[in-house]
Image 1 (cartoon, rainbow, N blue to C red):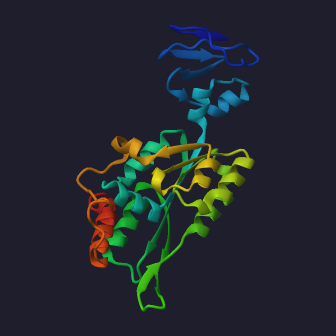
Image 2: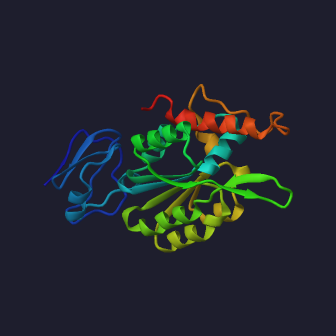
Length: 263
């Protein structure tokens, strides 16, 4: 049985199922072989559609895709400093989840040891929002000049999650511009996955951008992901002689933005 209610617009050109195709209007409800869907809202029951052999156009198939989000926290923090405005991590989650059905969202960040209150609130807030948070303690290194720096890399954790969870998603969204992820991205594409890289051009490796299926400039989605009231001075605004103390204050502002009123 095929029932079309209040349909406007031309007949759809996509391949039809065993019982024929469905014409689709702009916002009308369509019942096709017992499966109800909204023409501009995506499928309500993907499994039902698959069992009955119904196929849908690309715009609807995209809404059925499983999305996994992988955020390189250090890269996003550096991008926020470069842009001069801060990110709302809940809005980032909601924006990219809108591409389909969100499977999981991973966030990778280094933490001081012992963990300070601001960092703990930040991690707790991310977890409360729905992120799976991976952390690694910062380690102090002293160079030959006696200067001490603290570093931590979570590249291994990110790549491990990318590859070991690939059966659970169709599209990987990677918020990083690090060229070290070029090869894992190529592997995912060879296995039939779609990879979207999101960062800012001046911080994105040309090799990584070339390896991805799609690139998103974070500056172009500012309205969707900015956190008003939490602004970071851009790197080009006279901070050449800024002290490490000032940079720690900026980092605290970034982390505090994610935790301050989310709990």
